[in-house]
Length: 318
Image (cartoon, rainbow, N blue to C red; front, side, top):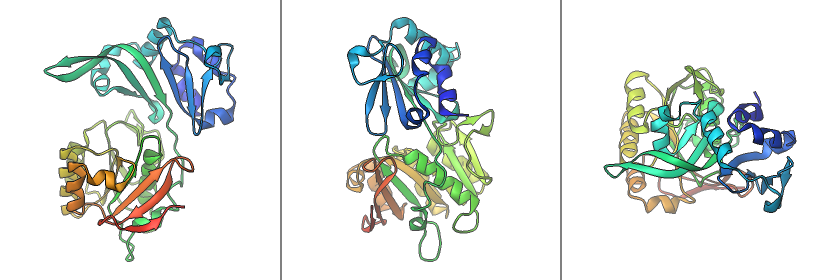
């Protein structure tokens, strides 16, 4: 199923007709559709931004753009929640709704607090539809650098700012390892807390992750890593966007159990990670033997550098 067919059912009917003139090439390059109440509807592509024109198609002029009204926002929220908005309290607390195909609807509005913690969001004012795509074999050029000279997999951290392709790369690494692209196939356990890596639906992954992946969907990373470690005898554990002390403790325990880990973290450089206490702990424990820094310099997934556990440069990006 195409990205357009997956995402259009969650867009208000009045906007669907305006998106119809988009060409397949434009859909292919589309990364985000941003809906802000009483503001122009905008689209973000790989290297530029445009608006949805009030007559359909794209325009560079905001004054010619379609303005999202309150009725359209209400329709969008009903479609996103399948008319059961209050059943999504946990996802609203995190600020996003995961859609089939691994797409995500980020939300902004008024936070409702309980004991100082966000319980849910109300009066939604903005929706950011982030489009996910599986790009098979995108990790092939990187994969050999993730093994040592004895062809043993190294625990690896993908270091990346937002929108630099870390989840796409992580997904393909999982597939290659499970399929045995460079060595014998490995048993891969994936903790997919945000349902973005595998896009599970009814217990079935909507994306190709190979035949040796066990996927724990919607589970917090720290707890999920331990559950997989104790129950599924993985050789590799994979998770996205680590950042808490609990995540670090679980990763160190996995390393001590002899299981390799491939994970990702938000940062623009290794030095930025070293300044954060959680990652300083991981680096000190040498939980990762490879750190791969990504950017969007030449498009999402650009490898800027590959480092060892001591943050020594092993290979510069192209």
